[in-house]
Structure formats: structure tokens, C-alpha cells
Image 1 (cartoon, rainbow, N blue to C red):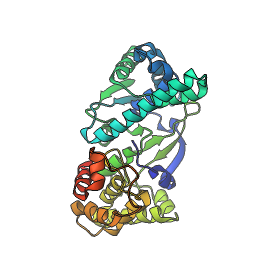
Image 2: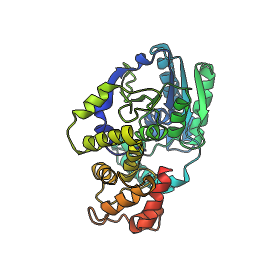
Image 3: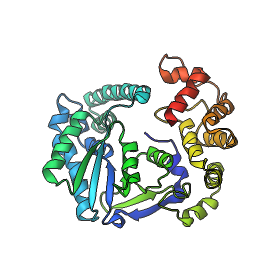
Image 4: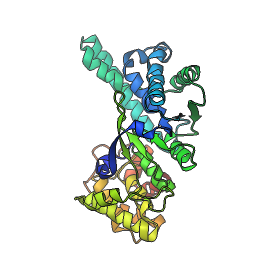
Length: 342
């Protein structure tokens, strides 16, 4: 999952570093992203009967090879691989939509393969890949065979890995997070812990983007970097203006990070659909316009301001699933948004 366009709007606080700069530290890894990348090289085989077993050596090698590189060449002290647990009930609609799209992609991949269009078929097979419990079991076995627990530790999250990784950093178990999901930043804001998050980690040279929310979380025990605050001050555009306001309100009233979380939710996430015509900019504006409202009522007032933008979502609110009902019924939407924030 991710908050659409969030990372693009946080480029001012992204630093291009090398992962070797985390030498001697403990890195927490969202292993699902590594499993998925490893699965792309054997996507067709994975979609055949028993594919999770027959292709195991290939996607497992991708994970263990990454661990080896970080330990040997980057010199990290330890790696903590965090695995997803049970599916979060609030994501039922999102997961159902992903399954529907995967089924359509698989049918198209097989059609393209039968037509002799191998490259096009491979791209569609990759869209069908998913991280399954069976694949996780194979990866865990491969890691245990190759590494001591003092080098690579396995952690099973109760639900999604994102919040578990932020908790591990907040508790001082890990120093930084390796992920591809922007939701990590929302969890970091919620926990008031500005953990460094490593994105776009290059397997060849180890270069990466590192994003930290210290410009928003001045009271975090990690402190803040004035450089990023100055960069934000020099950014043009609507969203940077809203971010500056949130940073100011966090410093002065302690409510800016909650505003940040609420705006991310309203812009659309795995737990809540965005309202018609509402993207990141509109969501951040609506929350900032209602900064003076009580925290547990802010989303309600922001939703009222956003309703009606962009007209009806084409074909998006006809079904009886929770997301469709939420787009039709303001009370259902506000309740869903409140549950997502919780």
C-alpha cells in the first residue's frame, strides 16, 4: 500500500545516500517487497500448480542474496526481516479488488502466451504475483539455513509489517527501515518517531533514498535536522505550504502530526477510498482549513468540504461493498476514516 503522490511531495526531505552509511546499525526490512521482487523472475512458474514450491529456490535466493550484501558489503550489524501476518479486516475491499485484478491479469497473460507474445505475457504474469504464507515459509527456511539468528532475525507481525517495523524502531530494537511503502511514514508520524526510511535501495551499488520526518516531529527523541526544515521553507506549491502549516501546528500545539495522518487517509489509502475528485492536494487543504476543529471531528468537517468535488466516481459507488457504501453514505465514510486513523 501507499499514499498516492506522498513520496513525490516529500522529495525535499529525501537524501540520496549509500546504505553503507548504516554500517554497524540494525536494519528492519519489509521482506514482502523482496519476496515480490524475487517472484518477478519466476512469475510464470509461480502461477502454475505447486509453483510456490517449484520456484522457491529462485525467490528465496533473491532474499538471502540481499541479506548477504547488506551484512558483507554494507557492514550492517544485523537484519530483522518482518513478515506480514493476518490480513487486516479493514483492508477486505482493497484485497478483494487486488484479487480481481490479478485474476484478470492471469487470464490475459495466458492469452498472450498462447498468441506467441512472450514478453507481453511475462509482464502480465508479474502482475499476478502475490506474497503467500507458503512462500514466506520457504523464505524463512532458506534464511535459517544460511544465517545465524545473530545476523538475520525473523519477526512475524500479527497483521501488516508496516506498523510492526515502526514499533521495533520506536522500541530501540532497530535503527532504520527498508521498505517501498509510503505508509511507513504515516505510522512514524503516529508514533512520533522520526525513523529513517530507506527507499529505492539499489542492489548493485547500494545507493538509496532516505526519508525522515524530523521536520514534522520536533519532539521526537531523535531530534530534528534544521536542514530539512530550511528545504521545506524554500519549496513552492500547495502541498509544501500545507506541510509547513502542519509542522508549525505540531511545534506550537502538538496537533500537526495528527493532521498529517488524517490528510493522508483522506487522500486515499488501503483502508479508505478517496472521495471523488479528491487527491493529495485537496485532502491536505481540507484538513489544514479545519485545523481549528477538535481532533476527533476534523475529518468530519474536512469530508463536508470535500464532498461534491469532481462529481460522481464512474462506476465506483454502485456495489454493496464497504468502499462503495462509504462513497454513497457520508456517515459510513466518516466512520471508516475514523477506524482507519485508529
